[in-house]
Length: 96
Image (cartoon, rainbow, N blue to C red; front, side, top):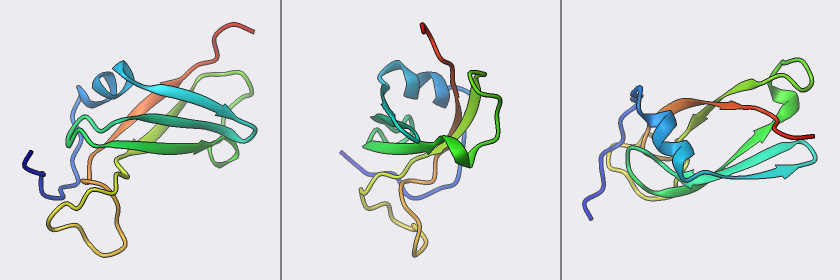
């Protein structure tokens, strides 16, 4: 499989592709989102920390997610992670 070069980019289809195979694990401070990047297809875990995002308790929250895979991508700047892709995920509480 040929790895894509690093490129900061988003696309309308990224969120739906990412959430299709998403595993969400609740934590005391938020959640861990586990899935594959819709651009480079590499798996990664993204940690959402509730107190880092302002929202009403129980209300849906839009979380900006970015690929943080550890796969090497040519052209990735020092100190960066992933392939450069980013998108938003809407987290909603279901059931009580």
